[in-house]
Image 1 (cartoon, helix red, strand yellow):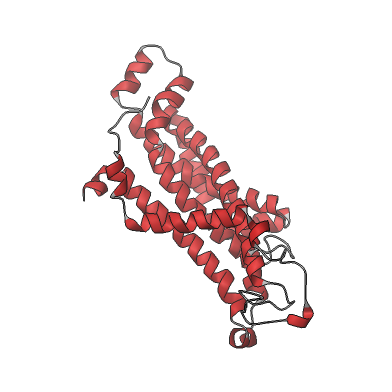
Image 2: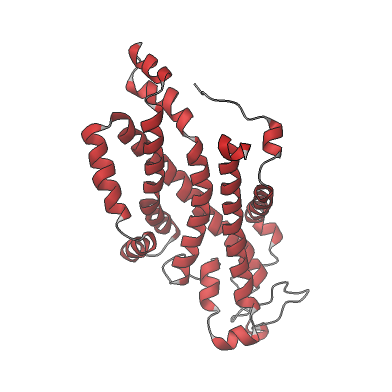
Amino acid sequence: MFIGGSIRGSDFLRVNRLFYIGAFIAVTFVLVAIFAHWIAPSDGTVPDLLHRYASPSSAHWFGTDALGRDVFSRVVFGARISLEVGISVVAVSSVIGILIGAFAGYFGGIVDKFLSGYVFNVFLAFPGLLLAIALVAFLGAGLGKLILALCVIGWVGYARVMRGQVLKVREYDYVQAARALGASNTRIIFTHILPNAIQPLIVQASLGMAGAVLAEASLSFLGLGIPPPAPSWGTMIEESRGFDILTSAPHVMFFPGLAIALTVLAFNFIGDGLREWLDPKQRSR
């Protein structure tokens, strides 16, 4: 059951233009990640010491790195890793956060006090990146462990947003009517409350994608992400540190940095556009 005015196609066409720019960039990176084996001229892990720090050319569009590996290929395959981490973290974190937040907001009382007053605050008391560093250092490096660490710190944001929405929606007349007719709590939550409280979570998920990609790059830069020779964007930047590289071969750092910036910017644009589209007040302005 969904209550509220429908959004017409013409309204969608009037959404913030930055949304379309972000969607175009995001779709481009998704296609690059899917067809990486066909786009990249090499697997990006085979060294070629005779062509170290080669400048961008027709043979190597983005040049080569310290081991002679093709930077373009590594950026392409790095998109697959970054988006895999982002999608996995958002999917798992949002499901966990939605369920816990809906449970806390619907039942209230001591349940809400324990979850929102203690559990949420415990996780929010620690800076997210520092907690992720501690978890990855404890669990060890690896793609699955990195995703697990980011999920542990990521679900709280979804839970807080969902709790606030459920506290509002549970007081609506149609929810009270369903309860008076004897509908079970499970049916009320999943049929009447969640469909009408999910809109802010869509925006949260798009912004969460940007945060997950940036967190993965940060952890990989610190040596706590995907172990080499996997072509992570953060690892590529970490391997290109040094004053001599910045002056003699800036392309080694520039292209993976540009990929991170564009990806984060794209999902932030999408989130801002969705917020404007889903919020009637902002849409009217």
